[in-house]
Amino acid sequence: MVIDALKASELVENLDRGKPVNIAFFYPDQNVMKALNSLFAKVLSKMDLIYLLDTLVTIQREVIINAAKANAKRLYFLERGLDIANPEQYALGMSNFRNEIVGDLEQARDKLAKSGLKIRIRLQKTANGVLISVINNTPILPEELSRITMRMERARSYNDFSEAYEEVYDSTEGAGLGIVLVTLLLKNSGIGVESYSITSDGTSTKCDVMIPLEIRPREVTTNIKTEILRQVEGLPTFPKHIIELQRLCGDPDASIGEISKRIMIDPSITSDVLKLSNSAGFITSKRIEQVSDAVMTIGLKNLNAILTASSARQILDKRFSKFEQIWNHCNKTAFYARILAMKMRLPKIMESVFLTGLLHDLGKIVLLSTDLELTNWISEMVNNRKIRTSTIMEEVSLGISHSSIGELIARHWAFPEYLTESIRCHHSPLNAPNEYRDQVYITYLANMFCGVETRKYDYYYLEGEVLERYGIASIEDAQNLHDEIKGRYETDSRS
Image (cartoon, rainbow, N blue to C red):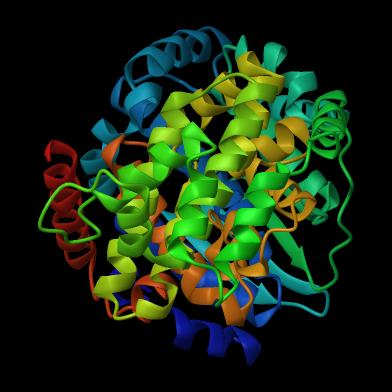
């Protein structure tokens, strides 16, 4: 089946009826990967395993890229008249191939399309689950298969990437890193390393990953994770004057004057309230300088959001390192989320998504404060290997992601459930409970748009279900929407 004709829902129905699904392509470009991701999402939804989507997408990307490299390698040897079975010529060819092609596989795209070398994805329903096979029509040498098998066995001995990354990072064999990543993802997600195999029949090479119907999650415990959990448990509660202010925000008999006086006790809260009331989200004829005017302008719901966000920031900044860049990102995400809610005609959640935007990256503060060197390495890995979210690498490296850390903090501080779920799911929106779907989806979109601006993400990373919910019919529509919101933010920042 040609990838352009991919209709994920129809294919999943065929798969469910026991009919194998086959998709062939020459090169895994963005459109191919986006279509496959959509298919994987629907397969996992059908199996009630949608929470595994980012894990499966990351695994399959590694496997598919390795298949493309294998095809490019065979083509490279053929073009140069090198005998791949000759040890001396193999060593020479591999050295040049790594230097010339591996770092920029895109340059081999046109040649692969003309060569007849293909990659085929086959999905097949079995009694135990769904078997996903990635097949490329080039054989693998016995020596290559032996090295791969050895790496797979070694990778199984690691509990997390923090045990392996120094050895893997220095490896001159590019496939070694991918094998460790895939093995740890399978091991730590509960899918199981026994679900992963690589075989060759002398004419083609096949990598199988079985997604079982029954998942047994494996609890990963590292020293870093243990320290993070200890630190979260030790976080102090909100100050009494903040708790009292939050109570007054919910009291219909409380006066603006009384609330304003209590706000002015805390200079940080006062600054945040005045800053918000003068932002572009609230149309005013003149600059607001009095707290009482600010409270009347933003309303008590927004005031409660500011109290929560500002207090959380004060506690974290005192307890951990100050990460101004993260807070600036959160402020922008909050602005984007509020405008998105307005654009999508969701006025009832405008205040709540403003707060979810302000606090969605709470866990990242704790994570970065615990082991900055390792988290910087994770960020580098995510960018270099085009992994859709850092959550995957955090989980296999540390045993816990910044989203999960944020959820722990939110529950420790008894945040409302919509806020807790938005923090937990801001990288995995399809995991959101139905009742909080809009808050999670809007927060996710706002965060992704901010990530696109820093080249951390690309538009093709966006979840199709999220775009469909808001009538965003294409990547171009998403880009236009982003450009409009970005323009409003830049106008606000200059004022």
